[in-house]
Length: 174
Image (cartoon, rainbow, N blue to C red; front, side, top):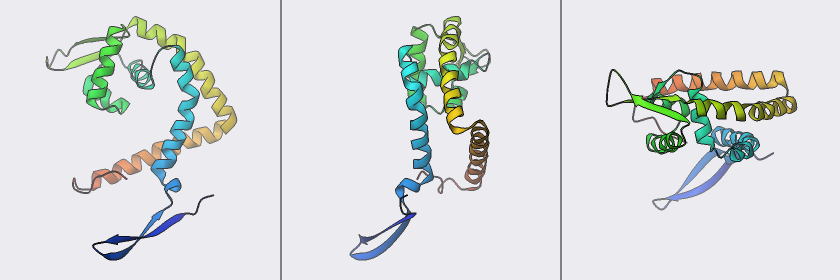
């Protein structure tokens, strides 16, 4: 296992400065990214067979849980940036996997719903997706998987609470 910390001398304005960080491989953002990539490797081929990207699948999965949703709410739910979401929605609409209509209360906003074709695609991909989940769960253990999901949800809530207490100048990424 890699050393827990990394140290190096760094010259700043001609002087020496000691920088001490946890080892890059042990940083929580990197651990989470590596875990996500390991998971997604199992799902990508299945999605590719159905000519759908990870982001398109994420949108369709979100849409199947609601009758319809406003675009900015969908962006938040799927963690997609507005410009990317806009491009992906155009493609899904062209493929007739979603339906878009104006919001009755604010004509500047669109509401998105999954179409019958989108639902048919979900029904076609879902058995393979659930089998992949089952395989991963068997390998990792059902109880450990439930615990991991619980811990990740708890971590998200705690970190979100920390963000709420920080000022706008303190918010940033690591």
